[in-house]
Image 1: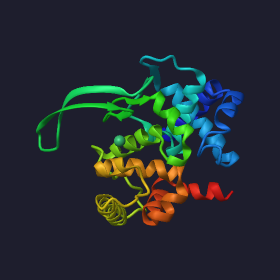
Image 2: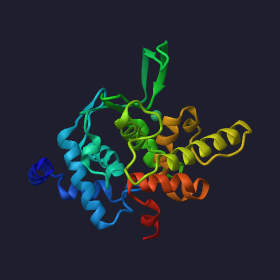
Image 3: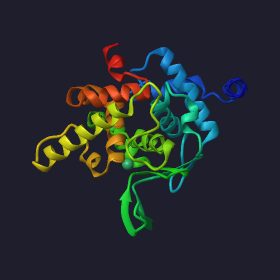
Image 4: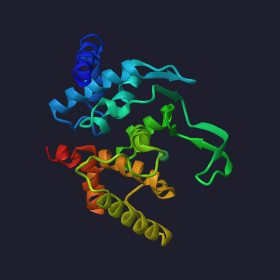
Length: 257
Ligand SMILES: [Zn+2]
Protein backbone atom coordinates (compact mmCIF):
# COMPACT_ATOMS: atom_id res chain seq x y z
CA UNK A 1 0.00 0.00 0.00
CA UNK A 2 2.87 2.33 0.84
CA UNK A 3 4.27 1.67 -2.65
CA UNK A 4 0.88 2.63 -4.13
CA UNK A 5 0.81 5.99 -2.30
CA UNK A 6 4.42 6.64 -3.21
CA UNK A 7 3.64 6.07 -6.89
CA UNK A 8 0.72 8.53 -6.63
CA UNK A 9 2.98 11.07 -4.91
CA UNK A 10 5.67 10.73 -7.58
CA UNK A 11 3.02 11.03 -10.33
CA UNK A 12 1.76 14.25 -8.68
CA UNK A 13 5.30 15.66 -8.45
CA UNK A 14 6.00 14.82 -12.07
CA UNK A 15 2.79 16.52 -13.21
CA UNK A 16 3.79 19.73 -11.44
CA UNK A 17 7.60 19.71 -11.33
CA UNK A 18 8.84 17.93 -14.45
CA UNK A 19 11.95 19.42 -16.08
CA UNK A 20 10.58 21.37 -19.10
CA UNK A 21 10.87 19.18 -22.20
CA UNK A 22 12.77 21.72 -24.31
CA UNK A 23 15.31 22.37 -21.56
CA UNK A 24 15.77 18.61 -21.10
CA UNK A 25 16.18 18.03 -24.85
CA UNK A 26 18.62 20.89 -25.33
CA UNK A 27 20.82 19.87 -22.40
CA UNK A 28 20.86 16.09 -22.76
CA UNK A 29 20.76 15.47 -26.52
CA UNK A 30 24.55 15.54 -26.85
CA UNK A 31 25.62 14.38 -23.39
CA UNK A 32 27.99 11.39 -23.46
CA UNK A 33 26.30 8.13 -22.35
CA UNK A 34 22.89 9.82 -22.10
CA UNK A 35 22.41 10.67 -25.79
CA UNK A 36 22.64 6.91 -26.54
CA UNK A 37 19.60 5.97 -24.43
CA UNK A 38 16.41 4.78 -26.15
CA UNK A 39 13.45 7.22 -26.19
CA UNK A 40 11.76 5.20 -23.41
CA UNK A 41 14.90 5.22 -21.25
CA UNK A 42 15.41 8.91 -21.95
CA UNK A 43 11.84 9.67 -20.81
CA UNK A 44 12.38 7.62 -17.62
CA UNK A 45 15.65 9.44 -16.94
CA UNK A 46 13.85 12.78 -17.33
CA UNK A 47 11.30 11.67 -14.70
CA UNK A 48 13.98 10.53 -12.26
CA UNK A 49 16.00 13.71 -12.86
CA UNK A 50 12.89 15.81 -12.20
CA UNK A 51 12.37 14.01 -8.87
CA UNK A 52 16.06 14.51 -8.11
CA UNK A 53 15.86 18.27 -8.65
CA UNK A 54 12.68 18.47 -6.57
CA UNK A 55 13.88 16.37 -3.63
CA UNK A 56 17.59 17.21 -3.45
CA UNK A 57 18.98 20.60 -2.51
CA UNK A 58 21.61 21.67 -5.05
CA UNK A 59 23.63 24.68 -4.04
CA UNK A 60 26.67 26.40 -5.51
CA UNK A 61 29.42 27.18 -2.97
CA UNK A 62 31.38 29.72 -5.00
CA UNK A 63 29.50 29.40 -8.26
CA UNK A 64 26.03 30.33 -9.52
CA UNK A 65 24.20 27.19 -10.68
CA UNK A 66 22.22 27.56 -13.92
CA UNK A 67 19.29 25.39 -15.04
CA UNK A 68 21.63 23.70 -17.54
CA UNK A 69 24.13 22.79 -14.80
CA UNK A 70 21.36 21.47 -12.56
CA UNK A 71 19.98 19.26 -15.34
CA UNK A 72 23.45 17.91 -16.19
CA UNK A 73 24.07 17.01 -12.54
CA UNK A 74 20.62 15.46 -12.10
CA UNK A 75 20.80 13.40 -15.30
CA UNK A 76 24.16 11.79 -14.48
CA UNK A 77 23.16 11.29 -10.84
CA UNK A 78 20.08 9.37 -12.02
CA UNK A 79 21.69 7.39 -14.88
CA UNK A 80 22.98 4.67 -12.48
CA UNK A 81 19.51 4.26 -10.93
CA UNK A 82 17.63 4.30 -14.25
CA UNK A 83 16.41 0.72 -13.67
CA UNK A 84 16.81 0.64 -9.87
CA UNK A 85 14.29 3.31 -8.89
CA UNK A 86 14.51 6.68 -7.16
CA UNK A 87 14.46 5.17 -3.66
CA UNK A 88 18.07 4.06 -4.18
CA UNK A 89 19.02 7.71 -3.63
CA UNK A 90 17.15 8.06 -0.35
CA UNK A 91 18.73 9.04 3.00
CA UNK A 92 20.47 12.25 1.92
CA UNK A 93 19.43 15.55 0.37
CA UNK A 94 22.33 17.92 -0.23
CA UNK A 95 24.50 18.37 -3.32
CA UNK A 96 27.17 21.03 -2.89
CA UNK A 97 28.87 22.26 -6.04
CA UNK A 98 32.18 24.10 -5.97
CA UNK A 99 33.45 26.00 -9.00
CA UNK A 100 36.72 24.09 -9.01
CA UNK A 101 38.56 21.45 -6.98
CA UNK A 102 38.13 22.04 -3.25
CA UNK A 103 40.56 21.75 -0.34
CA UNK A 104 39.78 19.60 2.71
CA UNK A 105 41.64 19.52 6.03
CA UNK A 106 40.18 17.36 8.79
CA UNK A 107 40.68 14.43 11.14
CA UNK A 108 39.24 11.07 10.08
CA UNK A 109 38.92 7.83 12.05
CA UNK A 110 39.86 4.58 10.28
CA UNK A 111 38.24 1.15 10.78
CA UNK A 112 40.67 0.42 13.67
CA UNK A 113 39.57 3.57 15.49
CA UNK A 114 42.82 5.43 14.72
CA UNK A 115 42.49 9.12 13.85
CA UNK A 116 44.42 10.41 10.82
CA UNK A 117 44.72 13.98 9.65
CA UNK A 118 43.67 14.36 6.04
CA UNK A 119 44.63 17.25 3.76
CA UNK A 120 43.74 16.98 0.11
CA UNK A 121 42.40 18.76 -2.98
CA UNK A 122 39.32 16.88 -4.19
CA UNK A 123 37.04 16.96 -7.24
CA UNK A 124 34.21 15.09 -5.53
CA UNK A 125 33.18 13.53 -2.24
CA UNK A 126 30.25 11.50 -0.89
CA UNK A 127 29.52 11.40 2.85
CA UNK A 128 27.77 8.53 4.60
CA UNK A 129 24.18 9.82 5.05
CA UNK A 130 25.56 13.28 4.22
CA UNK A 131 26.04 15.45 1.16
CA UNK A 132 27.50 14.75 -2.25
CA UNK A 133 30.14 17.36 -3.10
CA UNK A 134 31.19 18.05 -6.69
CA UNK A 135 33.59 20.36 -8.52
CA UNK A 136 31.97 21.86 -11.61
CA UNK A 137 35.36 22.24 -13.31
CA UNK A 138 35.83 18.45 -13.14
CA UNK A 139 32.32 17.80 -14.48
CA UNK A 140 33.18 20.00 -17.47
CA UNK A 141 36.52 18.26 -18.03
CA UNK A 142 34.78 14.87 -17.96
CA UNK A 143 32.24 16.02 -20.56
CA UNK A 144 34.93 17.51 -22.80
CA UNK A 145 37.02 14.30 -22.72
CA UNK A 146 34.52 11.42 -22.99
CA UNK A 147 37.24 9.02 -24.22
CA UNK A 148 38.72 9.03 -20.71
CA UNK A 149 35.61 7.29 -19.39
CA UNK A 150 35.50 9.47 -16.29
CA UNK A 151 32.47 11.07 -14.68
CA UNK A 152 32.74 12.48 -11.17
CA UNK A 153 28.94 12.58 -10.72
CA UNK A 154 28.53 8.85 -11.50
CA UNK A 155 31.57 8.19 -9.29
CA UNK A 156 30.05 9.86 -6.22
CA UNK A 157 26.62 8.30 -6.81
CA UNK A 158 28.32 4.88 -7.00
CA UNK A 159 29.80 5.63 -3.55
CA UNK A 160 26.31 6.53 -2.30
CA UNK A 161 24.92 3.22 -3.63
CA UNK A 162 27.90 1.41 -2.07
CA UNK A 163 26.98 3.04 1.28
CA UNK A 164 23.42 1.66 1.11
CA UNK A 165 24.58 -1.27 3.28
CA UNK A 166 27.04 0.58 5.54
CA UNK A 167 30.45 2.12 4.92
CA UNK A 168 31.66 2.14 1.30
CA UNK A 169 33.61 -1.10 0.75
CA UNK A 170 33.19 -1.83 -2.96
CA UNK A 171 30.03 -3.94 -2.65
CA UNK A 172 26.60 -2.28 -2.60
CA UNK A 173 23.48 -4.13 -1.43
CA UNK A 174 23.23 -6.78 -4.17
CA UNK A 175 19.90 -7.95 -5.60
CA UNK A 176 18.56 -11.25 -4.25
CA UNK A 177 19.33 -13.04 -7.54
CA UNK A 178 23.03 -12.01 -7.40
CA UNK A 179 25.28 -14.48 -5.53
CA UNK A 180 27.71 -12.52 -3.31
CA UNK A 181 30.45 -15.03 -4.20
CA UNK A 182 30.29 -14.15 -7.91
CA UNK A 183 30.66 -10.45 -7.09
CA UNK A 184 33.55 -10.81 -4.65
CA UNK A 185 35.38 -13.29 -6.93
CA UNK A 186 35.08 -11.06 -10.01
CA UNK A 187 36.05 -7.85 -8.23
CA UNK A 188 38.86 -9.23 -6.09
CA UNK A 189 40.50 -11.07 -9.04
CA UNK A 190 40.32 -8.01 -11.32
CA UNK A 191 41.56 -5.70 -8.52
CA UNK A 192 44.56 -7.92 -7.73
CA UNK A 193 45.45 -8.44 -11.37
CA UNK A 194 45.27 -4.71 -12.18
CA UNK A 195 47.38 -3.86 -9.13
CA UNK A 196 50.01 -6.30 -10.41
CA UNK A 197 49.96 -4.83 -13.92
CA UNK A 198 50.19 -1.30 -12.58
CA UNK A 199 53.06 -2.19 -10.25
CA UNK A 200 54.93 -3.48 -13.32
CA UNK A 201 54.21 -0.21 -15.19
CA UNK A 202 51.85 -1.94 -17.61
CA UNK A 203 48.76 -0.27 -19.06
CA UNK A 204 45.47 -0.68 -17.21
CA UNK A 205 42.06 0.12 -18.68
CA UNK A 206 40.94 2.31 -15.74
CA UNK A 207 41.96 5.53 -14.05
CA UNK A 208 44.71 4.29 -11.63
CA UNK A 209 42.85 6.00 -8.79
CA UNK A 210 40.66 2.86 -8.90
CA UNK A 211 43.50 0.95 -7.22
CA UNK A 212 43.59 3.06 -4.03
CA UNK A 213 40.79 1.06 -2.32
CA UNK A 214 38.04 -1.48 -3.20
CA UNK A 215 35.41 1.28 -2.82
CA UNK A 216 37.28 3.42 -5.39
CA UNK A 217 37.60 0.39 -7.67
CA UNK A 218 33.81 -0.05 -7.70
CA UNK A 219 33.22 3.69 -8.25
CA UNK A 220 35.76 3.96 -11.10
CA UNK A 221 34.48 0.73 -12.73
CA UNK A 222 30.98 2.25 -12.55
CA UNK A 223 32.20 5.37 -14.37
CA UNK A 224 33.72 3.22 -17.11
CA UNK A 225 30.65 0.97 -17.25
CA UNK A 226 28.47 3.91 -18.28
CA UNK A 227 31.01 6.06 -20.17
CA UNK A 228 33.32 3.56 -21.94
CA UNK A 229 31.43 0.23 -21.70
CA UNK A 230 33.27 -1.37 -24.65
CA UNK A 231 36.64 -0.83 -22.98
CA UNK A 232 35.45 -2.23 -19.65
CA UNK A 233 33.86 -5.27 -21.34
CA UNK A 234 36.94 -6.05 -23.41
CA UNK A 235 39.33 -5.80 -20.46
CA UNK A 236 37.32 -7.13 -17.51
CA UNK A 237 34.20 -8.90 -18.87
CA UNK A 238 33.37 -10.46 -15.48
CA UNK A 239 33.16 -7.00 -13.89
CA UNK A 240 31.07 -5.75 -16.80
CA UNK A 241 28.60 -8.64 -16.32
CA UNK A 242 28.35 -8.08 -12.55
CA UNK A 243 27.65 -4.38 -13.13
CA UNK A 244 24.99 -5.26 -15.75
CA UNK A 245 23.31 -7.41 -13.09
CA UNK A 246 23.62 -4.77 -10.38
CA UNK A 247 22.62 -1.68 -12.39
CA UNK A 248 20.10 -3.73 -14.42
CA UNK A 249 21.44 -2.04 -17.55
CA UNK A 250 23.61 -3.05 -20.49
CA UNK A 251 25.23 0.16 -21.85
CA UNK A 252 26.86 -1.81 -24.70
CA UNK A 253 23.39 -2.43 -26.11
CA UNK A 254 22.93 1.37 -26.28
CA UNK A 255 26.04 1.66 -28.44
CA UNK A 256 24.93 -1.15 -30.78
CA UNK A 257 21.66 0.66 -31.30
ZN1 LIG B 1 35.87 8.00 -4.77
